Amino acid sequence: KEDKIRPNLFEIDKKRISSKHKFKNINDYIISLKIKILLSPLKPKNITRAVQLIKKTNQFNLTTKRYNENDLLLLQKKKFEIFTIRIIDKYGDSGLTGVLILEPLKNRIWKIDTFLLSCRVLGRNIEKVILNFISKKLLNIDAKEIFGEFIPTKKNIIAKDFYNNLKFKKKSPNLWVWEL
Image 1 (cartoon, one colour):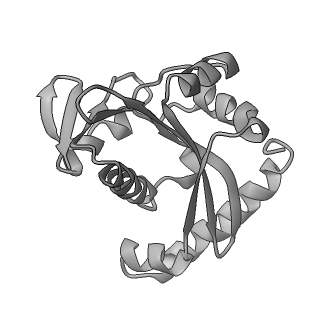
Image 2: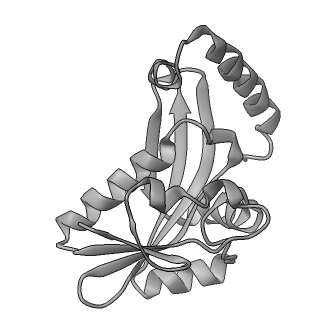
């Protein structure tokens, strides 16, 4: 479904980008978009699109782990929280454009196993809002820490400072922690 509407998505994106020059700063532009971020638990109807994103998204993909449908179903059985991310703004629905996988560890600690967003929705601070969602969700279940991993590749360098910029503390070269 997403592939069939891709040409329309690019046309909508052109309108979105062309409106950007009307604003003096990026924050006013982002506010003007009236962005809605819809996070939904992984469902059978969107698992194919989630796998497609997992296999091809590189730029904002913190770990570049690659999963297939069976892998995702197995992770769900292991009590991983898996979310799909849909972005809608005043110009239209960008479609299912992200995946978030949270792994439960011991002692009320969770790890961001996978966090990726299509390049079509970058530059709007969406990733920061999603991290806020994660922290609130985990606080509600009495979690105490979130671990975040960044595995660098040649293609995901734009995401290298994600955890540092959001005040995670570095535990090792690729592992970060945020106390809730």
